[in-house]
Length: 340
Ligand code: SF4
Ligand code: SF4
Image (cartoon, rainbow, N blue to C red; front, side, top):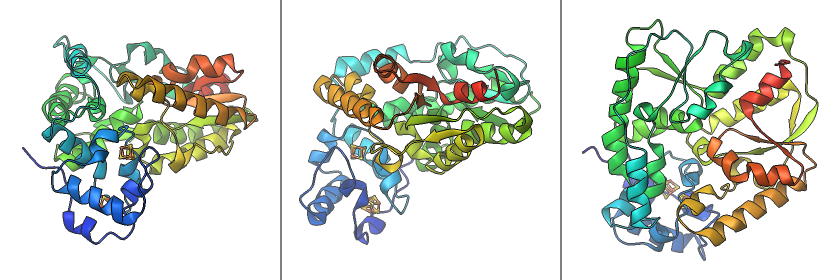
């Protein structure tokens, strides 16, 4: 088994311990205390961080040296048997999301859009924006990054290479493209950040949905009717694995006339939607996060609450709608600016 790519010497020379000091869910008296806890994690000793972690992915973004603090934290949780969710829930999820072996060869042509395990989202791949695209979907190509929320790096190591093989063998190998447009941040994070840190080879070129849409908007610029609306954006945890794409999203919003209103819980300070603690059965924390997010959005005067994660939308969508904001996915907002 390949170890997670990380260098303890880089942590030893780190002055700020940003990975822990910036954590929004665990407090430390000072940098010295954070350093002690980080050292325990690095040396595979028990730390309160391993028990208190919300698994929000943010420390992956906070570390200025790309030293993979979150992937290592999950590794230690699994090694020490510290599960963030009750064991029966983890086991049920493992069964539910297992590959079914029902995949069959299908001719595809580019752009091939990976919809992960979300068949209900296939309808999003439509119109001029996705003209000529082939969506692919199912648990046999599930990116499996969710196991970071359940201390199951072993499942990532076991299943991700299998998913990559399926994508190549059943779709890309005999097609006219070697690119895979990832509709969900999670897939892009898996095939770029996770694959690099875990030493998993990826034989295709992953393209983030935002890069794809941004380029399509240049092609379709004559069709854009600026929306002239204020939007509140709910940044998902998995975007922490590709923070550079958040700036591409700004370009998209600018092109379609959507003003991303400043809110306290956006960008590096984004707050979990509440879905993960709900899945961990930490309901009080989940309720608190939902309330904080919604109150924060309401202060902005935004007309839309824009999501890029179907799980965030399922968690917050109904509540934001009840408060008068329209929940919508990024791609659907773009489609409406294209008059579709
Ligand atoms: S993981 Fe990054 S931020 Fe954290 S102590 Fe190591 S180098 Fe510093
Ligand atoms: S994953 Fe989130 S909650 Fe856990 S230590 Fe990192 S920043 Fe804190």
